[in-house]
Length: 339
Figure (cartoon, rainbow, N blue to C red):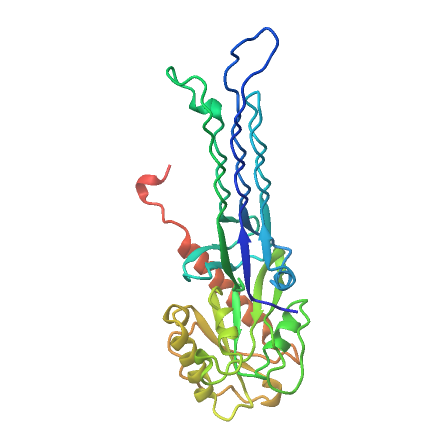
């Protein structure tokens, strides 16, 4: 089951209290204070795990608590610190404070870590309070309480190419042909109820990731249909591919509606590089594809996933565009920087 939003409660460990103790040893009169400090409480840490693709586990366990620190002991022995607790999440998870809505951080890669609740500091033992004029203190400090809060965990898939289209536009069929992914395919709307990721292999050990997103309908940016579930998962894609089936009633209107829904949700998302892909061309015959007004698109492509036609040109165009985006992100070297 694909779960992309959960609420969990976390509580860091409380620090151990300091100890009041005096040295008692044979032949050592007036040994003085030797109470040790308490250990610190454990942290609660959210960490990316590339082996995960859903937040399903957090529907079974919604409370995570770190270990408390142990109290200090005599002979100036500091208490053992509490163990941290690690919450594994799939890359692409956004962490927010449930009460304030404030962004705590984002886990974008495998191994990325965020401390979401800090453990309490251990209290000082009486040995800490010794001074020249106060040589037998009985003061001590209790350990500080660890942070406790409720968290919103929201998963936003990370992919290179996001397939955008209305229900039954051929997104799942295309993904199943170009990758090893096996999404559900049927001839009724909203077959895809959860996003699917597929790794597309090219020659020379080149690969990139394509996301098949649930179909979008008019009003999706207001939550209609699968609405926000769809739009959330294309925020982190680098390229958008707008799929227009050749058997649509009005190709231009369908493309314009998809663009409008994306723009209404996020202007930044609408400005991402995109292309137009006519699907189901096996139903069209040998006639050329109809013209479409797609300003800003880096290309218009025609494919038939069923007949495996047009796919090589489409994948090559996606790869070329991804390379250009990578080059644009790399810092340019000035002539003075060259060796």
